[in-house]
Amino acid sequence: MTPGLSVGMKRFTYVCLSLLTVIVLPVSLGEMYTSLLNVKQAISVERKLVGYLRTYIDQELERLEDIRRFYAKVSDLHKELYNEAGSAMANPLVAFTLIKRLHSEWLNVVYSNEALENAQALRSSFEEEEADLPKLEDLQGAANGLMRLQDVYALQVASLARGRFQRVTNGQTVDIYLPAVSVPLSGDDCFLVGKVAYEQKDYYHSVQWLEESVRLFRAAEVGWSPENEGTLEDALDHLAFSHFKTGNFSYALSLSQELLHHDPTNGRLLQNVEEYEKLLVAASPATADGLRRPTCTYLRTRDTYERLCQTQGTQVSITSNQPIQFENPELFCDYFTNDHPALLLLPLKREVLRLQPFVVLYHTFVTDAEAEDIKRAAQPGLRRSVVAAGEKQAAAEYRISKSAWLKGSAHSIVGKLDHRISMLTGLKVHHPYGEYLQVVNYGIGGHYEPHFDHATSPSSPVFRLKTGNRVATFMIYLSSVEAGGSTAFIYANFSVPVVEKAAIFWWNLRRNGQGDVDTLHAGCPVLIGDKWVANKWIHEFGQEFLHRCSLNPEE
Image 1 (cartoon, rainbow, N blue to C red):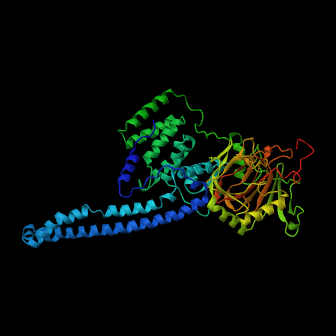
Image 2 (image 1 turned 60 degrees about the horizontal axis):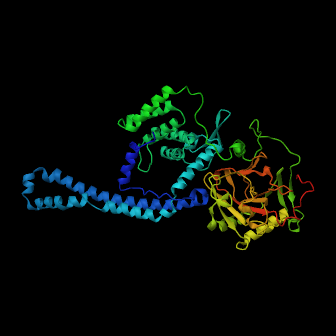
Image 3 (image 1 turned 90 degrees about the vertical axis):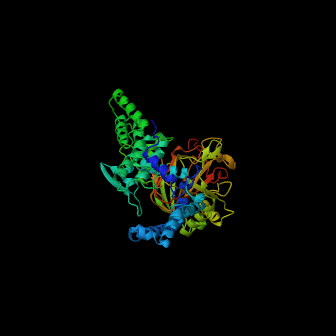
Protein backbone atom coordinates (compact mmCIF):
# COMPACT_ATOMS: atom_id res chain seq x y z
CA MET A 1 0.00 0.00 0.00
CA THR A 2 2.90 2.37 -0.59
CA PRO A 3 2.56 5.18 -3.13
CA GLY A 4 3.39 4.08 -6.67
CA LEU A 5 3.54 5.81 -10.06
CA SER A 6 0.83 8.45 -9.91
CA VAL A 7 -0.24 11.12 -12.35
CA GLY A 8 2.35 13.45 -10.86
CA MET A 9 5.11 10.90 -11.34
CA LYS A 10 4.07 10.46 -14.98
CA ARG A 11 4.27 14.21 -15.46
CA PHE A 12 7.67 14.29 -13.82
CA THR A 13 8.84 11.59 -16.26
CA TYR A 14 7.72 13.82 -19.11
CA VAL A 15 9.75 16.71 -17.73
CA CYS A 16 12.84 14.52 -17.50
CA LEU A 17 12.53 13.90 -21.24
CA SER A 18 12.15 17.58 -22.14
CA LEU A 19 14.94 19.93 -23.08
CA LEU A 20 14.90 21.64 -19.68
CA THR A 21 15.80 18.51 -17.76
CA VAL A 22 17.11 19.19 -14.27
CA ILE A 23 20.10 16.96 -13.66
CA VAL A 24 19.51 14.57 -10.76
CA LEU A 25 22.27 14.97 -8.23
CA PRO A 26 24.03 11.80 -7.10
CA VAL A 27 23.29 10.66 -3.57
CA SER A 28 26.31 11.73 -1.55
CA LEU A 29 27.11 13.21 1.79
CA GLY A 30 26.19 16.89 1.99
CA GLU A 31 27.05 19.22 4.82
CA MET A 32 25.94 22.61 3.49
CA TYR A 33 22.93 22.67 5.82
CA THR A 34 25.13 22.26 8.92
CA SER A 35 26.65 25.74 8.62
CA LEU A 36 24.86 28.96 7.73
CA LEU A 37 28.12 30.25 6.27
CA ASN A 38 27.90 27.57 3.57
CA VAL A 39 24.22 28.29 2.99
CA LYS A 40 25.07 31.96 2.41
CA GLN A 41 27.75 30.96 -0.08
CA ALA A 42 25.10 29.07 -2.07
CA ILE A 43 23.50 32.43 -2.97
CA SER A 44 26.42 33.27 -5.26
CA VAL A 45 26.10 29.85 -6.92
CA GLU A 46 22.43 30.41 -7.71
CA ARG A 47 23.25 33.92 -8.94
CA LYS A 48 25.49 32.29 -11.57
CA LEU A 49 22.72 29.85 -12.49
CA VAL A 50 20.31 32.75 -12.96
CA GLY A 51 22.79 34.27 -15.42
CA TYR A 52 23.10 31.00 -17.33
CA LEU A 53 19.31 30.68 -17.51
CA ARG A 54 19.01 34.26 -18.79
CA THR A 55 21.45 33.42 -21.59
CA TYR A 56 19.44 30.29 -22.41
CA ILE A 57 16.17 32.25 -22.52
CA ASP A 58 17.71 34.87 -24.82
CA GLN A 59 18.99 32.17 -27.17
CA GLU A 60 15.63 30.40 -27.17
CA LEU A 61 13.77 33.65 -27.84
CA GLU A 62 16.07 34.29 -30.79
CA ARG A 63 15.45 30.76 -32.07
CA LEU A 64 11.69 31.10 -31.69
CA GLU A 65 11.81 34.47 -33.44
CA ASP A 66 13.46 32.76 -36.43
CA ILE A 67 10.72 30.11 -36.43
CA ARG A 68 8.04 32.80 -36.14
CA ARG A 69 9.56 34.62 -39.15
CA PHE A 70 9.52 31.39 -41.21
CA TYR A 71 5.93 30.75 -40.19
CA ALA A 72 4.88 34.29 -41.21
CA LYS A 73 6.63 33.94 -44.60
CA VAL A 74 4.93 30.63 -45.44
CA SER A 75 1.52 31.77 -44.10
CA ASP A 76 1.65 34.90 -46.25
CA LEU A 77 2.43 32.81 -49.34
CA HIS A 78 -0.65 30.64 -48.73
CA LYS A 79 -2.86 33.67 -48.08
CA GLU A 80 -1.76 35.64 -51.12
CA LEU A 81 0.27 33.79 -53.75
CA TYR A 82 -1.22 30.28 -53.62
CA ASN A 83 -4.92 31.25 -53.79
CA GLU A 84 -4.68 30.58 -57.50
CA ALA A 85 -2.55 27.44 -57.46
CA GLY A 86 -2.63 26.95 -61.22
CA SER A 87 -1.35 30.38 -62.15
CA ALA A 88 1.13 30.39 -59.27
CA MET A 89 2.73 27.09 -60.25
CA ALA A 90 2.88 28.23 -63.87
CA ASN A 91 5.72 30.46 -62.77
CA PRO A 92 8.87 28.26 -62.55
CA LEU A 93 10.36 30.51 -59.88
CA VAL A 94 7.34 30.01 -57.62
CA ALA A 95 7.38 26.27 -58.29
CA PHE A 96 11.10 26.03 -57.54
CA THR A 97 10.82 27.87 -54.22
CA LEU A 98 7.93 25.59 -53.16
CA ILE A 99 9.90 22.43 -53.95
CA LYS A 100 13.07 23.79 -52.31
CA ARG A 101 11.16 24.84 -49.19
CA LEU A 102 9.45 21.47 -48.77
CA HIS A 103 12.65 19.56 -49.45
CA SER A 104 15.08 21.44 -47.18
CA GLU A 105 13.70 24.50 -45.36
CA TRP A 106 11.01 22.61 -43.47
CA LEU A 107 13.51 19.90 -42.53
CA ASN A 108 15.99 22.49 -41.32
CA VAL A 109 13.33 24.04 -39.08
CA VAL A 110 11.78 20.81 -37.82
CA TYR A 111 15.03 18.93 -37.26
CA SER A 112 17.12 21.87 -36.10
CA ASN A 113 19.69 21.07 -33.43
CA GLU A 114 19.69 24.64 -32.17
CA ALA A 115 17.25 23.93 -29.34
CA LEU A 116 19.31 20.94 -28.26
CA GLU A 117 22.52 22.96 -28.46
CA ASN A 118 21.01 25.72 -26.34
CA ALA A 119 19.82 23.20 -23.76
CA GLN A 120 23.20 21.44 -23.77
CA ALA A 121 24.97 24.77 -23.18
CA LEU A 122 22.70 25.34 -20.17
CA ARG A 123 23.41 21.84 -18.87
CA SER A 124 27.16 22.30 -19.28
CA SER A 125 27.08 25.56 -17.34
CA PHE A 126 24.99 23.88 -14.65
CA GLU A 127 27.46 21.01 -14.38
CA GLU A 128 30.32 23.48 -13.83
CA GLU A 129 28.63 24.53 -10.58
CA GLU A 130 27.48 21.04 -9.59
CA ALA A 131 30.22 20.51 -6.99
CA ASP A 132 28.96 23.56 -5.06
CA LEU A 133 25.29 22.58 -5.17
CA PRO A 134 23.45 21.10 -2.19
CA LYS A 135 23.25 17.32 -2.06
CA LEU A 136 20.34 15.10 -1.10
CA GLU A 137 21.50 15.10 2.53
CA ASP A 138 21.38 18.90 2.53
CA LEU A 139 17.76 18.89 1.41
CA GLN A 140 16.89 16.29 4.05
CA GLY A 141 18.88 18.16 6.70
CA ALA A 142 17.20 21.48 5.90
CA ALA A 143 13.76 19.81 6.04
CA ASN A 144 14.62 18.20 9.38
CA GLY A 145 15.78 21.61 10.59
CA LEU A 146 12.34 23.07 9.85
CA MET A 147 10.65 20.19 11.67
CA ARG A 148 13.00 20.67 14.62
CA LEU A 149 12.07 24.36 14.85
CA GLN A 150 8.41 23.38 14.56
CA ASP A 151 8.73 21.05 17.56
CA VAL A 152 11.03 22.97 19.88
CA TYR A 153 9.26 26.31 19.45
CA ALA A 154 5.74 24.80 19.03
CA LEU A 155 5.32 26.49 15.65
CA GLN A 156 2.26 25.99 13.46
CA VAL A 157 2.95 24.48 10.05
CA ALA A 158 0.29 26.65 8.40
CA SER A 159 2.01 29.76 9.76
CA LEU A 160 5.44 28.58 8.59
CA ALA A 161 3.97 28.08 5.13
CA ARG A 162 2.89 31.74 5.18
CA GLY A 163 6.40 32.82 6.18
CA ARG A 164 5.38 33.52 9.79
CA PHE A 165 6.71 32.12 13.07
CA GLN A 166 3.61 31.64 15.21
CA ARG A 167 2.36 29.37 17.97
CA VAL A 168 -0.86 29.06 19.93
CA THR A 169 -0.67 30.55 23.44
CA ASN A 170 -3.76 30.52 25.68
CA GLY A 171 -5.93 29.80 22.66
CA GLN A 172 -4.52 32.73 20.67
CA THR A 173 -2.19 32.56 17.69
CA VAL A 174 0.74 34.84 18.43
CA ASP A 175 3.88 35.81 16.54
CA ILE A 176 6.95 34.73 18.48
CA TYR A 177 9.14 36.64 16.07
CA LEU A 178 8.62 38.86 13.03
CA PRO A 179 11.62 38.44 10.72
CA ALA A 180 12.74 41.36 8.57
CA VAL A 181 12.89 39.07 5.52
CA SER A 182 10.76 36.00 4.84
CA VAL A 183 9.13 34.00 2.04
CA PRO A 184 5.99 31.87 1.90
CA LEU A 185 6.30 28.17 1.12
CA SER A 186 4.68 26.58 -1.92
CA GLY A 187 2.71 23.37 -2.05
CA ASP A 188 5.80 21.69 -3.49
CA ASP A 189 8.01 23.06 -0.67
CA CYS A 190 5.67 21.59 1.95
CA PHE A 191 5.43 18.35 -0.05
CA LEU A 192 9.21 17.91 0.09
CA VAL A 193 9.33 18.46 3.86
CA GLY A 194 6.47 16.00 4.30
CA LYS A 195 8.15 13.52 1.98
CA VAL A 196 11.38 13.66 4.00
CA ALA A 197 9.39 12.87 7.15
CA TYR A 198 7.45 10.16 5.28
CA GLU A 199 10.64 8.43 4.12
CA GLN A 200 11.90 8.48 7.71
CA LYS A 201 8.61 6.82 8.76
CA ASP A 202 7.89 9.95 10.80
CA TYR A 203 4.18 10.14 10.12
CA TYR A 204 3.59 12.68 12.90
CA HIS A 205 5.33 15.31 10.80
CA SER A 206 4.44 13.94 7.36
CA VAL A 207 0.71 14.28 8.07
CA GLN A 208 1.02 17.94 9.09
CA TRP A 209 3.26 19.01 6.22
CA LEU A 210 1.43 17.00 3.57
CA GLU A 211 -1.93 18.37 4.71
CA GLU A 212 -0.56 21.87 4.21
CA SER A 213 0.86 20.82 0.85
CA VAL A 214 -2.55 19.55 -0.28
CA ARG A 215 -4.21 22.80 0.84
CA LEU A 216 -1.68 24.92 -1.07
CA PHE A 217 -1.84 22.78 -4.21
CA ARG A 218 -5.64 23.04 -4.22
CA ALA A 219 -5.50 26.82 -3.76
CA ALA A 220 -2.84 27.38 -6.43
CA GLU A 221 -4.05 29.30 -9.48
CA VAL A 222 -1.45 27.61 -11.66
CA GLY A 223 -1.43 23.82 -11.91
CA TRP A 224 1.72 21.79 -12.09
CA SER A 225 4.97 23.71 -12.72
CA PRO A 226 8.06 22.23 -14.39
CA GLU A 227 10.31 23.04 -11.43
CA ASN A 228 8.10 21.13 -8.98
CA GLU A 229 8.90 17.63 -7.82
CA GLY A 230 5.40 16.85 -6.63
CA THR A 231 1.77 17.43 -7.58
CA LEU A 232 -1.54 17.45 -5.75
CA GLU A 233 -1.92 13.77 -6.61
CA ASP A 234 1.50 12.95 -5.12
CA ALA A 235 0.70 14.84 -1.93
CA LEU A 236 -2.68 13.11 -1.61
CA ASP A 237 -1.05 9.73 -2.20
CA HIS A 238 1.59 10.18 0.52
CA LEU A 239 -0.92 11.79 2.90
CA ALA A 240 -3.38 8.92 2.55
CA PHE A 241 -0.73 6.37 3.47
CA SER A 242 0.53 8.57 6.34
CA HIS A 243 -2.98 8.65 7.80
CA PHE A 244 -3.22 4.89 7.38
CA LYS A 245 0.01 4.44 9.34
CA THR A 246 -1.32 6.61 12.17
CA GLY A 247 -4.55 4.59 12.34
CA ASN A 248 -6.79 7.19 10.69
CA PHE A 249 -8.37 4.71 8.24
CA SER A 250 -11.38 6.93 7.52
CA TYR A 251 -9.29 9.81 6.22
CA ALA A 252 -6.96 7.44 4.36
CA LEU A 253 -10.03 6.00 2.58
CA SER A 254 -11.43 9.44 1.75
CA LEU A 255 -8.15 10.63 0.25
CA SER A 256 -7.68 7.42 -1.73
CA GLN A 257 -11.18 7.76 -3.18
CA GLU A 258 -10.35 11.33 -4.20
CA LEU A 259 -7.20 10.04 -5.91
CA LEU A 260 -9.26 7.52 -7.87
CA HIS A 261 -11.09 10.40 -9.55
CA HIS A 262 -7.74 11.45 -11.04
CA ASP A 263 -6.61 7.91 -11.88
CA PRO A 264 -9.64 5.54 -11.85
CA THR A 265 -7.76 2.54 -13.30
CA ASN A 266 -4.91 2.57 -10.75
CA GLY A 267 -4.87 -0.98 -9.41
CA ARG A 268 -2.84 -0.12 -6.31
CA LEU A 269 -5.33 2.57 -5.28
CA LEU A 270 -8.26 0.20 -5.84
CA GLN A 271 -6.57 -2.36 -3.57
CA ASN A 272 -5.90 0.31 -0.93
CA VAL A 273 -9.54 1.44 -0.95
CA GLU A 274 -10.69 -2.15 -0.51
CA GLU A 275 -8.22 -2.68 2.36
CA TYR A 276 -9.19 0.57 4.12
CA GLU A 277 -12.90 -0.32 3.89
CA LYS A 278 -12.20 -3.68 5.56
CA LEU A 279 -10.15 -2.03 8.29
CA LEU A 280 -12.91 0.50 8.99
CA VAL A 281 -15.43 -2.28 9.46
CA ALA A 282 -13.12 -4.19 11.81
CA ALA A 283 -11.72 -1.22 13.73
CA SER A 284 -13.16 0.06 17.00
CA PRO A 285 -14.06 3.77 17.20
CA ALA A 286 -11.00 5.99 17.61
CA THR A 287 -10.56 7.22 21.15
CA ALA A 288 -7.45 9.37 20.77
CA ASP A 289 -5.41 11.31 18.26
CA GLY A 290 -3.12 8.90 16.43
CA LEU A 291 -0.43 11.55 15.89
CA ARG A 292 2.45 11.13 18.29
CA ARG A 293 5.84 12.77 18.16
CA PRO A 294 8.77 10.46 17.46
CA THR A 295 10.82 9.42 20.45
CA CYS A 296 14.29 10.83 20.99
CA THR A 297 17.44 10.12 22.96
CA TYR A 298 16.71 12.87 25.47
CA LEU A 299 12.99 12.12 25.90
CA ARG A 300 13.14 12.44 29.71
CA THR A 301 14.35 16.04 29.47
CA ARG A 302 12.61 17.06 26.25
CA ASP A 303 9.78 19.02 27.85
CA THR A 304 12.14 21.00 30.06
CA TYR A 305 14.56 21.58 27.20
CA GLU A 306 11.87 22.90 24.86
CA ARG A 307 10.28 25.02 27.58
CA LEU A 308 13.62 26.69 28.31
CA CYS A 309 14.28 27.26 24.61
CA GLN A 310 10.86 28.86 24.14
CA THR A 311 11.34 31.29 27.03
CA GLN A 312 14.77 32.32 25.64
CA GLY A 313 16.60 33.17 28.84
CA THR A 314 13.85 33.22 31.46
CA GLN A 315 13.53 30.72 34.29
CA VAL A 316 10.29 28.76 34.02
CA SER A 317 7.99 27.17 36.60
CA ILE A 318 7.97 23.40 36.19
CA THR A 319 4.35 23.15 37.34
CA SER A 320 2.70 26.12 35.58
CA ASN A 321 5.07 26.39 32.58
CA GLN A 322 5.09 30.17 33.15
CA PRO A 323 8.11 32.50 33.51
CA ILE A 324 9.24 33.10 37.08
CA GLN A 325 9.75 36.73 38.02
CA PHE A 326 11.82 37.11 41.17
CA GLU A 327 15.00 38.59 42.53
CA ASN A 328 17.65 36.35 44.01
CA PRO A 329 19.68 38.43 46.47
CA GLU A 330 22.65 36.07 46.09
CA LEU A 331 23.01 36.88 42.38
CA PHE A 332 24.74 40.10 41.40
CA CYS A 333 26.57 42.10 38.76
CA ASP A 334 29.93 43.79 39.27
CA TYR A 335 33.10 45.00 37.63
CA PHE A 336 35.42 42.04 37.94
CA THR A 337 39.22 42.11 38.13
CA ASN A 338 40.01 38.74 39.75
CA ASP A 339 42.73 40.72 41.55
CA HIS A 340 44.77 40.63 38.37
CA PRO A 341 46.92 43.76 37.79
CA ALA A 342 46.08 43.89 34.08
CA LEU A 343 42.35 44.11 34.87
CA LEU A 344 42.53 46.78 37.56
CA LEU A 345 42.22 49.66 35.09
CA LEU A 346 39.92 47.82 32.70
CA PRO A 347 37.70 45.42 34.64
CA LEU A 348 35.07 43.31 32.90
CA LYS A 349 31.36 43.50 33.55
CA ARG A 350 30.47 40.25 35.29
CA GLU A 351 26.94 38.94 35.76
CA VAL A 352 26.55 35.96 38.13
CA LEU A 353 23.70 33.96 36.62
CA ARG A 354 23.62 30.96 38.91
CA LEU A 355 25.37 29.69 42.01
CA GLN A 356 24.63 25.97 41.49
CA PRO A 357 26.00 25.27 39.05
CA PHE A 358 28.23 28.33 39.18
CA VAL A 359 27.58 30.16 35.87
CA VAL A 360 28.76 33.69 35.08
CA LEU A 361 28.48 35.93 32.04
CA TYR A 362 31.26 38.35 31.11
CA HIS A 363 29.87 41.16 29.00
CA THR A 364 31.89 42.63 26.11
CA PHE A 365 34.58 40.01 26.44
CA VAL A 366 35.69 40.49 22.82
CA THR A 367 35.51 43.44 20.45
CA ASP A 368 33.74 43.43 17.09
CA ALA A 369 37.09 43.28 15.32
CA GLU A 370 38.29 40.34 17.43
CA ALA A 371 35.07 38.41 16.80
CA GLU A 372 35.42 38.94 13.04
CA ASP A 373 39.11 37.92 13.16
CA ILE A 374 38.22 34.66 14.89
CA LYS A 375 35.43 33.85 12.42
CA ARG A 376 37.67 34.70 9.47
CA ALA A 377 40.50 32.51 10.79
CA ALA A 378 38.12 29.59 11.34
CA GLN A 379 36.35 29.62 7.98
CA PRO A 380 38.92 27.61 5.97
CA GLY A 381 38.95 24.84 8.58
CA LEU A 382 35.22 24.46 9.23
CA ARG A 383 34.16 20.81 9.22
CA ARG A 384 31.05 18.98 10.40
CA SER A 385 30.97 19.00 14.22
CA VAL A 386 31.38 15.63 15.87
CA VAL A 387 30.49 14.13 19.23
CA ALA A 388 32.08 11.42 21.36
CA ALA A 389 30.99 7.94 20.30
CA GLY A 390 32.79 5.55 22.61
CA GLU A 391 36.50 5.96 22.02
CA LYS A 392 35.91 7.68 18.68
CA GLN A 393 34.15 10.78 17.40
CA ALA A 394 31.39 10.93 14.82
CA ALA A 395 28.85 13.30 13.30
CA ALA A 396 25.36 13.10 14.79
CA GLU A 397 21.93 14.56 14.04
CA TYR A 398 21.69 15.87 17.59
CA ARG A 399 24.51 18.31 16.84
CA ILE A 400 24.01 20.37 13.67
CA SER A 401 26.95 22.72 13.14
CA LYS A 402 30.44 23.00 11.71
CA SER A 403 33.55 23.67 13.77
CA ALA A 404 37.23 24.45 13.40
CA TRP A 405 40.11 24.26 15.87
CA LEU A 406 42.47 27.23 16.13
CA LYS A 407 45.96 26.95 17.64
CA GLY A 408 47.48 29.88 19.48
CA SER A 409 50.76 29.38 17.66
CA ALA A 410 49.06 29.87 14.28
CA HIS A 411 46.73 32.74 15.14
CA SER A 412 47.79 35.67 17.33
CA ILE A 413 44.18 36.45 18.27
CA VAL A 414 43.89 33.03 19.93
CA GLY A 415 46.91 33.74 22.14
CA LYS A 416 45.35 37.05 23.19
CA LEU A 417 42.09 35.34 24.12
CA ASP A 418 43.89 32.58 26.03
CA HIS A 419 45.68 35.22 28.08
CA ARG A 420 42.43 37.09 28.77
CA ILE A 421 40.60 33.88 29.79
CA SER A 422 43.47 32.97 32.10
CA MET A 423 43.33 36.39 33.79
CA LEU A 424 39.58 36.07 34.39
CA THR A 425 39.52 32.46 35.57
CA GLY A 426 42.92 32.25 37.22
CA LEU A 427 43.48 28.94 35.40
CA LYS A 428 46.06 27.61 32.98
CA VAL A 429 44.32 27.50 29.62
CA HIS A 430 47.12 27.04 27.08
CA HIS A 431 47.63 23.64 25.47
CA PRO A 432 47.68 20.95 26.90
CA TYR A 433 45.99 22.36 30.06
CA GLY A 434 43.25 23.64 27.78
CA GLU A 435 42.11 22.42 24.39
CA TYR A 436 42.62 24.48 21.26
CA LEU A 437 39.95 27.11 20.65
CA GLN A 438 36.97 25.51 18.94
CA VAL A 439 34.97 27.88 16.69
CA VAL A 440 31.45 26.76 15.81
CA ASN A 441 28.97 27.97 13.19
CA TYR A 442 25.44 26.58 13.44
CA GLY A 443 23.33 25.49 10.46
CA ILE A 444 19.63 25.49 9.54
CA GLY A 445 17.82 24.91 12.82
CA GLY A 446 21.33 24.34 14.22
CA HIS A 447 21.37 22.94 17.74
CA TYR A 448 23.15 20.68 20.21
CA GLU A 449 20.83 18.48 22.25
CA PRO A 450 21.32 18.08 26.03
CA HIS A 451 24.84 16.92 26.86
CA PHE A 452 27.71 17.28 29.31
CA ASP A 453 30.95 18.97 28.32
CA HIS A 454 32.94 16.78 30.70
CA ALA A 455 33.60 13.15 29.91
CA THR A 456 31.28 10.63 31.51
CA SER A 457 33.20 7.54 30.33
CA PRO A 458 36.85 6.57 30.91
CA SER A 459 37.16 5.77 27.19
CA SER A 460 36.12 9.29 26.11
CA PRO A 461 38.35 11.11 23.58
CA VAL A 462 38.49 13.96 26.13
CA PHE A 463 41.23 12.06 27.96
CA ARG A 464 43.58 11.94 24.96
CA LEU A 465 45.35 15.08 26.17
CA LYS A 466 46.47 13.16 29.27
CA THR A 467 45.46 16.16 31.38
CA GLY A 468 42.32 14.80 32.97
CA ASN A 469 38.73 15.77 32.47
CA ARG A 470 37.24 19.10 31.39
CA VAL A 471 37.04 21.02 34.61
CA ALA A 472 35.48 24.17 33.12
CA THR A 473 33.93 25.63 29.97
CA PHE A 474 34.49 29.14 28.63
CA MET A 475 32.18 29.90 25.69
CA ILE A 476 32.33 33.16 23.70
CA TYR A 477 29.36 34.45 21.70
CA LEU A 478 30.92 35.77 18.47
CA SER A 479 27.63 36.92 16.93
CA SER A 480 24.10 37.85 17.81
CA VAL A 481 20.97 36.02 16.67
CA GLU A 482 17.51 37.43 16.11
CA ALA A 483 15.67 34.54 17.77
CA GLY A 484 16.48 31.20 19.37
CA GLY A 485 19.93 29.78 20.05
CA SER A 486 19.83 30.08 23.86
CA THR A 487 22.02 27.91 26.09
CA ALA A 488 19.62 25.89 28.26
CA PHE A 489 20.74 24.28 31.53
CA ILE A 490 18.26 21.46 31.87
CA TYR A 491 18.46 20.30 35.49
CA ALA A 492 19.27 23.79 36.77
CA ASN A 493 16.10 24.98 34.98
CA PHE A 494 17.33 28.21 33.38
CA SER A 495 18.59 29.38 30.00
CA VAL A 496 20.95 32.07 28.79
CA PRO A 497 20.15 33.98 25.58
CA VAL A 498 22.88 34.75 23.06
CA VAL A 499 24.63 37.98 24.07
CA GLU A 500 26.93 39.17 21.30
CA LYS A 501 30.61 39.63 22.29
CA ALA A 502 29.90 38.21 25.78
CA ALA A 503 31.35 35.02 27.25
CA ILE A 504 29.80 32.48 29.59
CA PHE A 505 31.82 30.43 32.09
CA TRP A 506 30.91 27.47 34.28
CA TRP A 507 32.56 24.64 36.22
CA ASN A 508 31.90 21.18 34.81
CA LEU A 509 33.41 19.28 37.75
CA ARG A 510 32.72 19.59 41.43
CA ARG A 511 35.71 20.26 43.69
CA ASN A 512 35.97 16.54 44.42
CA GLY A 513 36.59 15.88 40.71
CA GLN A 514 33.17 14.32 40.05
CA GLY A 515 31.05 15.57 37.18
CA ASP A 516 28.38 18.12 38.12
CA VAL A 517 25.07 16.74 36.80
CA ASP A 518 23.53 20.22 37.05
CA THR A 519 25.69 21.29 34.08
CA LEU A 520 23.63 19.23 31.64
CA HIS A 521 23.00 21.82 28.96
CA ALA A 522 21.91 22.25 25.36
CA GLY A 523 22.27 24.68 22.49
CA CYS A 524 18.70 25.55 21.50
CA PRO A 525 17.95 25.55 17.76
CA VAL A 526 18.65 28.85 16.04
CA LEU A 527 15.30 30.18 14.86
CA ILE A 528 16.49 33.30 13.02
CA GLY A 529 20.10 34.37 12.73
CA ASP A 530 23.67 33.19 12.19
CA LYS A 531 25.14 31.85 15.43
CA TRP A 532 28.90 31.70 15.98
CA VAL A 533 30.53 30.66 19.25
CA ALA A 534 34.04 29.83 20.38
CA ASN A 535 34.64 27.18 23.06
CA LYS A 536 37.61 26.90 25.35
CA TRP A 537 37.60 23.70 27.39
CA ILE A 538 39.94 23.78 30.36
CA HIS A 539 41.28 20.51 31.82
CA GLU A 540 41.80 19.65 35.48
CA PHE A 541 45.52 18.78 35.48
CA GLY A 542 47.72 21.79 36.13
CA GLN A 543 44.98 23.54 38.12
CA GLU A 544 45.70 21.78 41.43
CA PHE A 545 46.91 24.94 43.19
CA LEU A 546 44.71 27.30 41.20
CA HIS A 547 41.38 25.58 41.80
CA ARG A 548 41.86 23.67 45.03
CA CYS A 549 39.90 20.74 46.34
CA SER A 550 37.53 21.27 49.23
CA LEU A 551 38.01 19.74 52.67
CA ASN A 552 34.50 18.36 52.23
CA PRO A 553 34.71 15.27 49.97
CA GLU A 554 31.04 15.71 49.04
CA GLU A 555 31.60 19.13 47.42
